[in-house]
Length: 454
Image (cartoon, rainbow, N blue to C red; front, side, top):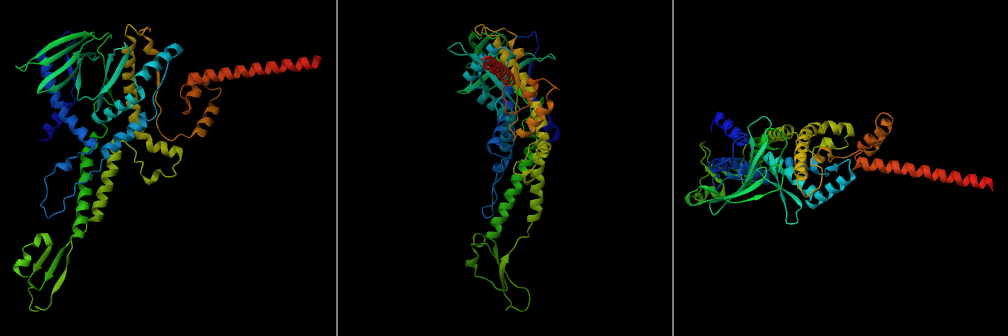
């Protein structure tokens, strides 16, 4: 595969499915899109295998039996995903609404769906595949529910306008070599199957009660690129270098014996390869000068170490992930730590904006349900607070908060403190505490006045 073919292959794999705004999906078009999606799943499978530790070095052709053949996997892909996910979603997202009743309703819906765990799983899927889906449904208790899905299980069809409106969501599986699944539009769910002639047909349709296609797409970048995808070749290079280094260790532990100036019997040389002995006749006239020692391979340890150091450094630099095992993190000041984490913070700031947009769609769908009994536009007033999971200097934060007094509002000052989950609640508590303090002073003053009168 040449460079142009590779470029076209990966470009097609990230191309999203679209349909005209006034066009309804047909069974023929649905089948065509499913076949295209199954081709895209080859990339998803590669990314999944890389994250789980099944790297390309494990599939290389085996060496001869007498040669060391180590296959070591340095799973930096998993390290990148887990580090980014922990930094981004290690501390749960805080949801806040101006209306206290709406706050309680949000809390109930989120608890019912284990939203903190769900958000973390969605974030991890996004870092692995470049995107993730969230499917919404109403359960048997008429409660709004949503669940995370990888892009392997289905795909979204958008319209071809610049607004990219959701048109359909297709979820399918292969059962007994036949396609079986469902697709949803803005009002109904249609269940379909594949017949003996390999044609799709609808078996059932139901209302889903949402005002819109009941799915949300999550992504961290517009290119739908996984967190470790740009550095896969570098990770493969590290695996190869560290495996060859291990092969060299095995080689030196099983070095060949070199014998010069004497001949061994033929039967002693039959197992030359297994016994690792090399026997050569001395060409000089002095036949009594016999040399017996081990044949040593030239050492390239320094070259290998330099290569590994460069590859590992490039992995962290290009993936914009901090290497927490780096010695330079020891005894680092707060400002220096911020500078070291700046590339990763920039990467996750973009991801935060993408997730905020997806969260808006999540709660817009929920507010559209008829049994929720909420204003359909209440989702517009929900505020999301993302807190990076990193060491916090609370003393430094409180000093900054004191210096901000009189410059910005007290509620905004409280929002700067990482130890505060809900700034509005904390502000209300502070005001109530000040009010109680005033009442205590008034009561004390009243008692003093009474004593004086007596």
